[in-house]
Image (tube, one colour):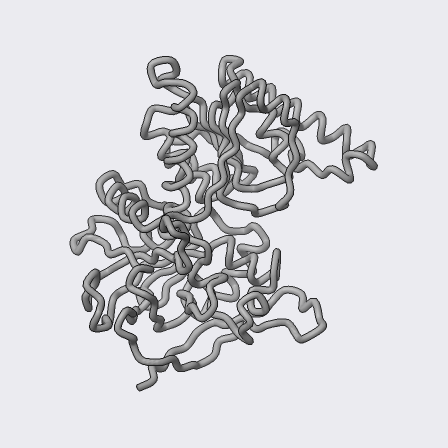
Length: 384
C-alpha cells in the first residue's frame, strides 16, 4: 500500500553545473507503507532552520548530490501527530504529539552522525503533508502539554543542540573553576535561536548573559527571554576576513576599530574579567573577536558553522590561558528526552515570530529568511 502526500522539494543541480540557489517546488509524491520499526506522522508546525537555508544555497554541499537523490524534502524541526505505528514500535501510539529528534545514523554512544530531514539519505522532512520516520527519531510530548504547539515547532534542532552543547561547555568550565569560586560566570553569544536557547539555560543557573544582534526585532526577543541584548551594528563590522585584513587597509582599520569597541564593551560589562563561556554559532568571521574576549580558563563553544568552516588560533596563548574549545553536533536520545522534560517544566521554549507562514507560503519564508528579514524562530504551519 502506498501513502500519498504533497511536499516542497528541492532538486539536484544539473550534472556538471554549479546549480545556483535551489528552488522549492511543490509536488505530489507517494511512499511505502509503515514498516515494523516506523511511525507515520502528520506535521502540525515546523521550524525553519539554518540547515534548510544551507541546503537551498547548496552550501557547503549540494544536499541532493550528497544524498545521491534527485530530489529531497527538507525540514528536521517540528511538532507532529502520530497517525500510525509499526507493529514493533512500543514508544509511541496513534494520536500522540511529539517533537522530532532528527538523529538518524548514530555512533556507538548514541550521538548523531547524519541528520534526518537534511543529510540522511531517504529521510522525509517536515515540508510534507505526511511523512514517516524510525521510532527512535521521535520524542513524545506530555499528552497535556501546557505550551502552545507552535512553540514546540522550533524546539527539535535549536533547543536540542543547545541542551547538549551547554551541558558539555558548562561542565568544562566547572572542571576548571568551581561554583564557589565563580558563582555568576559571564556568558555571551553570537548567533541565532540556538545561541539564545543556550544563553537562557546559562541564565537559569545564575550566569550573567549577553547576546549580540544587529536586528532590532531579534533584540526584543532576546530581552523577552531575560538575556541582555547588545546592538552588534553599533560596534561596527565585526566580521573578520583573513585575506581582506591582509590586503585591504580600509577594511583592516575598520575591523580593528570594531574589535576594539567590542572588547571595550566586554571589559566594561564583565568588570574586566572577560567572558567565561562564549557561545559562537557563526564561525570564522566572529572567532577572532570571541576568542579575544575570553577570560582566563574561558570556554568557546559551538555546534554550528553558519559562516566559515575553517579557524586558526595561537596554541601557546590558548594553553597559557587554559582556553577550551567545545564542538558538538545535535544531541543523543537521552539528552533529547531530558530537554523535553525540562522545557515542559520550566517553559524553556522558543518564542515564535509573530507571523506563522502557511504551507502555501513556504517559498516566501525561505526567501525572507535568506535575506535576514525574519526573527529568531520562524515557524510554518502544515496541519496545525
